[in-house]
Every structure is written in structure tokens, then in C-alpha cells.
View 1 (cartoon, rainbow over the protein chains, first blue to last red):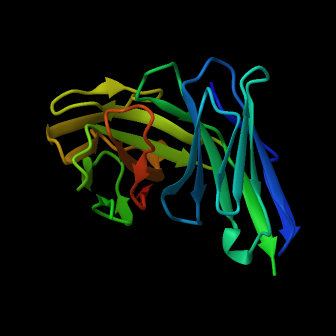
View 2: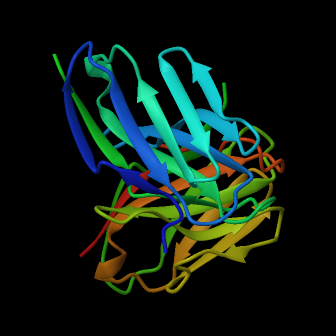
Length: 112
Length: 113
């Protein structure tokens, strides 16, 4: 079963708008990570947030984590056409393991 | 810069063939992973290794085996390829610390005819 489930499955916005993607998970985690995948390529790590953190920023990215609701969100501000990609959250299947479980992803399309 | 290299971007094989997918990382990472990615199913873990000669089954190991004879190299083997193994295969590596991200190769798109 999938640990991380992203929502929505697909998102289409205009350049300059903000994009928000959500991830829900089922069990306790040590950390949660967000990755981007351009079409036909491997995944690229964006940001890692630990279970004792509530918010983290990296450039135009803002990630929040609510462990009480077992959910996280990724906000991309002032989106660009180059942000068009699939975005995945990944959670460790139990604390301290090397094994991560990826969701099915959100496909983001930014229209110029 | 961190680098995970998969031997082929595209590969076409026939049913019943033995197929080897190779992955090499240059970051001295302890952990290495093989995933397959299918539309609507996301990434599913096939096998992972946390040290040389060590391997652990992931969620979908059936029909696959792995080999890790050297720290930098992790091979995925399809013993007798079948059409349902047509997929995108992604290799990743990470340090032993579970609070570190995984680094991915560009993937191998494998077609079994």
C-alpha cells in the first residue's frame, strides 16, 4: 500500500500563479521528502522536512508538515513554465529505516 | 556533483531473456535502491542494499534478483524477462543516515517484446 498519497493527481495553472500540492501518509515518520521528476528523467530531491519541523523554505518552495493530521503540503510560488513536472512525496516506512515509500505523484503543468 | 549512472536509457529485450540493468554511484553511499515506475502506480521498491553483498526485498521482488559485489555498483537482474516487466526502472543511492535524500539516475526504459 502507498504510504504517501498526493493530491491533486494533476494541476494546471498559469505562469506566475502559486501551485499547492498535498501529501497524506498513514504511519509515524522520521522525515518527509519532496521530489520533482521531469518527463522521462529521474527524480530530483527538492526538500526534506523532519518530523519535529513544521515549515521549511527553499527558494520559491515552501513545505509544511502537520504530524497530527499526517499531512504535508508543497507550495511553489510564482510558478514558471520550467516548473512543469511531476512532484512526489516520500516517507520512511518506519522510523530509522532506509526504505522510503513514494506516492503516485502530482502532475503539474504551468502554462506560459 | 553527485552522480548516479544507469547503463542504458532505453533497452529492448525478448521474453525469456536474462536482462541485466547496471547502476553505478560515485558518492560512496552505503544504500542503493531499485524501483520500477508505472503509470498510475508511482514508484515501487523492488530491492535495496545497505552494504556490499547485502540485499533486502522491497515490495515487488518477484521475478527479480540483485547483486552488490562492490559498494559503487548495484545490479538488477531479470532472470527470465516477461512482458509484464516492461517498465521504467530507476536506481537511487543514499548515505547510511536515513535523514539524507536519495539521489536518482535518469532511469532505464525497458521494453520486453
